[in-house]
Length: 230
View 1 (cartoon, rainbow, N blue to C red):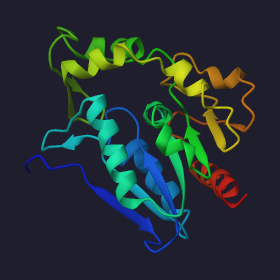
View 2 (view 1 turned 180 degrees about the horizontal axis):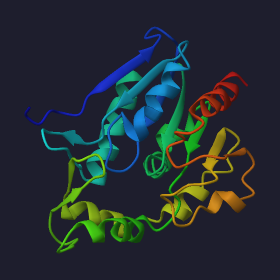
View 3 (view 1 turned 60 degrees about the horizontal axis):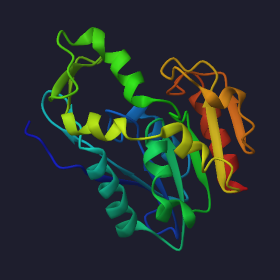
């Protein structure tokens, strides 16, 4: 299997006048979090659910695009598939990418952040991966073994970009907008600093679940259905 370009998938009603754009997390594709986003999309069949890959998949695993390229991908998909009404659902690091795109958020009817990664991701990711790589060096391309047996290739430029990001400030900066809804995971095993567990964010729900909401996926989908119907 050769490397392929990032692709887009539509779930639900392709003719709906309300699209939902899904932005996945770090080192993943649209199957992020054990089909997290696709399960949510399937629970909203009346909408035009637009899922897409931010990275490139090959025979051995994913190669991460730079953050700049990922941002360009989000904008391109948005411009291609936007409808009269649209909403945004993002997971983990995808929440940072969404929060940085003001054009995307300004016109959104609903914005839903799932387990948003509002912390120093540059350090968190390094801490998570150092034990897996004998010579951990963010100044060069790295190949990281993942728990599913694949390899994730991370370019040096990705680390340089991430070091200059301010996820906490950026995500908190949009979290109190009236159309914003945050669903945090009480037992998030990925985030070192889960600030939303003690946050006063207006539209906040906390589910007793893990980072990918794999234990109570139906409850999560029901919560999102409620938000989208309100």
